[in-house]
Image 1 (tube, one colour):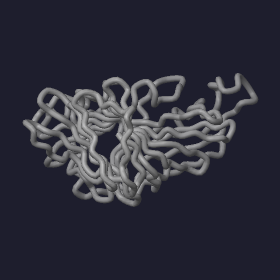
Image 2 (cartoon, rainbow, N blue to C red; image 1 turned 90 degrees about the vertical axis):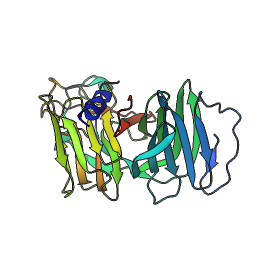
Image 3 (tube, rainbow, N blue to C red; image 1 turned 45 degrees about the vertical axis):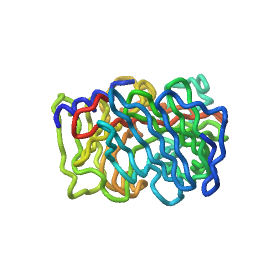
Length: 315
C-alpha cells in the first residue's frame, strides 16, 4: 500500500464518432484511434479503453445523461480482468473572476496588481451535456463535450487520455467577452456519496500521511509535497494533481499555500464529497496578479488524475 501511494505521488511530478445525446451514433471517417484504443458508444454511454502499461489497460465509461455523474466508472485491468477504481464521479470546476488593472501600467503585462482587493466573484461552472466527439493527436485520445457555462464564460469540457498510462487530463476550456478579466480556478473529482475510505498525501517533510474519512466533515485545505492528493478505497487509489508550470500565478516568493483540498461541500459551491486542487485567492497578500483572460481567448482550466489497483501497476 505504501509503495502504491508513493508511486501515485510521483505522478504529480509528471509534468468516434460524433454523438448527440439521446441520438444515434454516426460514423466519422476522420477518426483513427491510436494503437490499442477502443471506443464504443450507445445512446447513454461512451466507453473508451486504452493501453495503460505492460499487460494492462485503462477504461473510462462516460455517462451522457444530464443530471448524472459524467464518469460512471474509471477502471484498470490486470491479466485481462477489469476492476473499477472509482465510480460515479464528476469533474467539477470553480471559476473565480476578477478585474485586471489595464490602465495604470503595462496593460495585460501588469504584475503589480492586487486583483483580490477589487470586486470578484466565484462560480461553479455548470455543465449541460450537449454532445460528444472523439479525436486523436498522435497517441493521445481527446474527448470533447460542449456545454460548460458560467455567468460570463462558455466553453467545452476536454478529456485527454494518454496511451501507456492509467491517466487522464480534464480541462474546462472556456472564454469570455468581458474585457479586463482576471481569473483563478479550483477543480477536482466530486461524488454525491463519498467514493473513498481514506485520503493520503505526502506532507511538506515528505512523511506519508493518511486521514480516515469515514466521518466526512466540511472540506479541508492541505499543504502537501508534490501538489498531489490521493483517495483510496478497497479497489485502488486515484491521485489528483495540477498541470505542472501552468497552475501557479506569479508571486514575489514561492510559498506552499495549501494547493489541494478534500472533503464535503468545498467552498459551499461543490455539493458532495471530493478531492482536488485549489488556488489561494489572496496569494501571499502582496501583489496578486491572477491570470489574464482577454476577450475571446480560450482559457484551459485543467488537472490530472492517475490511478492504480491494490496490486502495483506502473503509473
